Length: 310
View 1 (tube, rainbow, N blue to C red):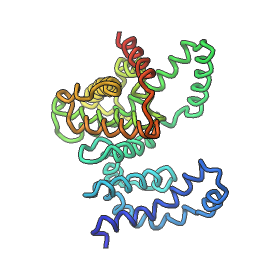
View 2 (view 1 turned 60 degrees about the vertical axis):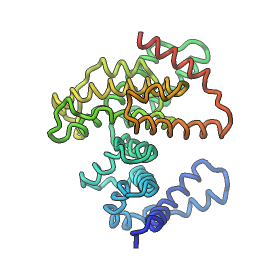
View 3 (view 1 turned 180 degrees about the vertical axis):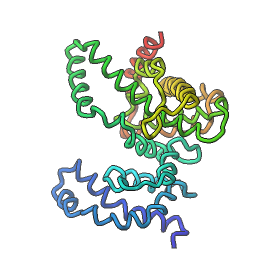
View 4 (view 1 turned 135 degrees about the vertical axis):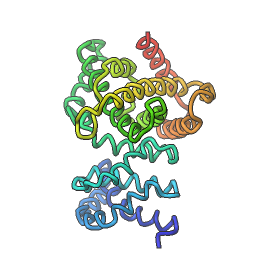
């Protein structure tokens, strides 16, 4: 029976194991690990996944946070491997996506849920290869002290478009129902900022101040999941979310080297706790438990932030 947490954990662990083995092999040079991964045929899981998908999706709202984290990680792996391409049940998608801004879960679940959402957003598919190439060229120019204004502007534009896509998705979610526009919980978007900061590949979205300001200034029309205009009410919510995300990003960046208690009276306590947990995880991952050397780079970030705001 799966009434016990340990049983639910073991079941998801078993399903997740082959995905983890392949992921491990992608960064390993161990011949035994590589050979083991080569023998794995993920397609054999298709029938099991389809049969138990509703139960697996319920895992993201399980009473146990550990089960939630395992279930969310597994569903993200399924999405990336194409197992969910033919799933058209909007309720299942919504149940997973909504965890990205849920206050009753862990930072790890919110981070993976946001990754799940980003996989669905067109802005994160377009020009991916060009993006990598441009970033490489920009890095080379920085080393030579010859970074061009046009390259910087292109990068800001791409980041602004991605921020707009995230804010549009969040606005559609938060305006669902009859909630008055002034009562929409835009502060939930703080979770998005904290999750993006916890993703090395996406942290730049909430630390490039000029791009964040650009996203706010562009005032683009909010789009729904079908790519159509979502309406004036969602447009208003999206603008408020972008401003809220900017404020949260500033607070998070300053709080990274300051005293987080400075913000405890102006941010939801759950958000403060979530950011603290993410910062702790990031610090251990980056330093391996050694003393941090991030103050110098943080000073540069603060200088860039001041310049952008001015």
